[in-house]
Length: 154
Image (tube, rainbow, N blue to C red):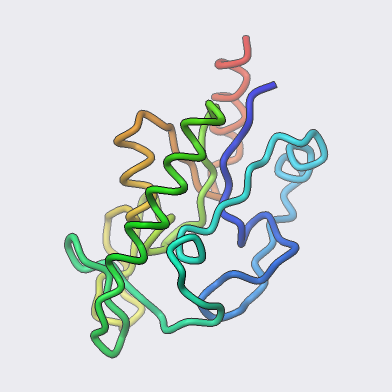
């Protein structure tokens, strides 16, 4: 049975988001994967040593900055490397990551202006996962993720 790396905020059970919000995924497919024991939850920000809650951060080029301008790139990089390591050692089929996050966004991320403006891009952990050859989906991609899982387990 292939494993799936997932954002811990989607997995639930522990609040890890910057704003301490609960965004546990309740999609039937996700719950089925969870019951099967497929999911490996990761939070790159927490892995990098950041607290919960923590200041909102956004990716600006190769850096990650808080709204106050504090550079948290080192923490985001450390956490992204740990997520990448876990994906590799567990030979995951793919990753299902939280949309729009400066770590986990795979299609869109906030643009660094802290005005709720999104731009095409990917979070730091997603970039490292993709560089390691890991396919990445977000919580809006269940149909595609299911099809992909079926193809790699066939």
